[in-house]
Image (cartoon, rainbow, N blue to C red; front, side, top):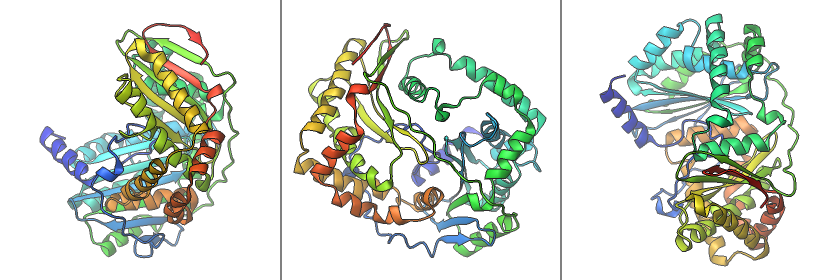
Length: 469
């Protein structure tokens, strides 16, 4: 793709907005207050999707929403099943690499890459421990050709010996790059180290070793693909500049003859628990800045129980310019430009709750102290009526509105919700649940889900040493 075309596609995708990949580890947060984002009021009546939901005879479900804001069409597929679900270690990871690099088997790897270039397509495959997301964004004029490729990727991905060799070489390279001795220094490094320590020996930290890759066979990868890539286990989100009925017909043509199989059953993963007292891990890098992650696991939570925690996190450190952590660490202390909380629950197993910040090496311990101080304060002192009102309003009128910001966001929200719960009950009730949260509920959530006495601390920066908070 030449530079001019790349810039054009990037500009169109910026106008379209939304996220095109699963947010596995939190990612960067938008620091604008949602009430300052100029969002339109949510007008959609949930969970009425009768005009957008497509159900094929083989059981496959898709959400198809025209949006002529920009001349782009977005195809997204959510597959229930991730890296924790393969029978043989590495099968899911290899399939992800094959899909991302080699495309459908009838096209051939080299031609797949060339075609993506010719179509000016943005293509991505993201995998978490519990789910896979495949997305393709193309100019509207190329939508039909892109859908043919997209359906082929899902139904007939290229799994061959050449790909297996490439995967084994990638694992060797990744193992070397992920050794602690090669940490270069960043917040991503600190988060990765934290997650590895948190889920040590847990199935959610299953990593592919060189021995795993050497033992992996094509049959292992093909079995994973057959088990999880089946119509009743895949949910589509399609949006963009098209007419609804013609697009629905195209989807039916590409997927209706796909033979369905019973999707696999899913088990729940055991919880993890950080030890008390919490540990400090310091990793030395030759940098002028220090990155800090503080936190512990979250147990599996129902969507209803999650809401008071989200309100509490919004007040404490929800990733905008008016949280308690931000005021203490930046506005009053001048120690950092960001101090945010990340609530990342699991669906079938444990998640994590982390606080992330950075600053000069000499203020690292002070930043950690501020995090612990604000956690204990929100546990012991009721939040104000103003804090509660702002948080609830921002979540219902701002953060929630982003889920339906445009056609792409709406289709993706519906598909992701359906892939997780096969119902819209949680989505339909969310705003009412938020409105019902009281100051006591916020304090109770802080007391129930935050345990400063056993929080793990990871500090990546100049200096070495260990200790306890």
